[in-house]
Image 1: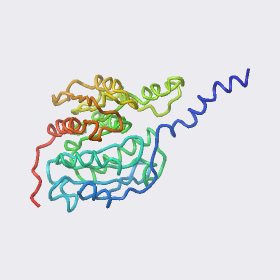
Image 2: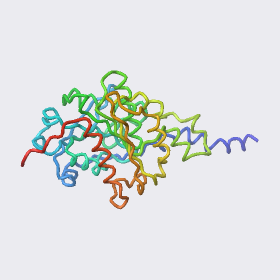
Image 3: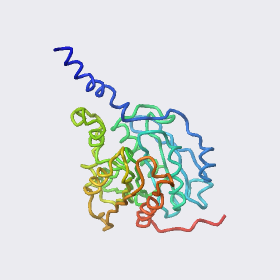
Image 4: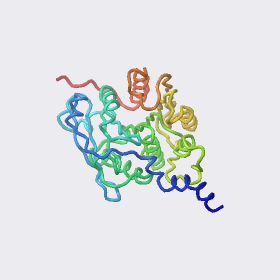
Length: 301
């Protein structure tokens, strides 16, 4: 009887012990900015942010086309938006070049930091740790680069959407809302996503990192835009719709929320031209950016 009980409980005990290894899949290497610059055909600046628990996070700043390609002054001196991007659970910042390229081509600046435990960063990832990392990234853009909150669009993909939603909700509650929140293929909560993938395990009881965006997004008062692939088998499309339905119908300034369905896209192929989603993805982001900043023509070269 005891042996049978142990055998029955073994999958649950293993899940409890190793759950964070199932959630976070960092690639431990230093991304090469030179290769990224060649791929993007844009200038990349290495930047660093310090978390409130003393970790130094590495990231990149990619100014929009124009005078800012020689330094970072454009992030302060013009009115173009700054997209602060939060990654999904795998890889590192160099794997987000397609998104950065579209942001850059949209005449917006991009800032991207790797989380603790990812790329060359110290530490180990957890929900609270990633929340600290998001705060550090926000402080860097606000305090080091002196960019007003009203020009910063907080963006997140998949797990990063949970990070971005928490940051946006907290900032709105504090009276310093970002310019907008952009979500790509984001779950309603990690609990819901985990229960979808592991229906035979008591995920809702034992999951430590919950990323409960569903309870936080009602507090987001800035404009919200979301995109989600109809064929997504990692974060089901319906979870994205559920999260969106919980968001305020319009921002405090009266901007309606926006949801874009990508009919042919799954989870990891949104940036694949074969999925036919890039145009709709860009339109969704552009619609949000057009509401938060005055467009500026790139300087002549």
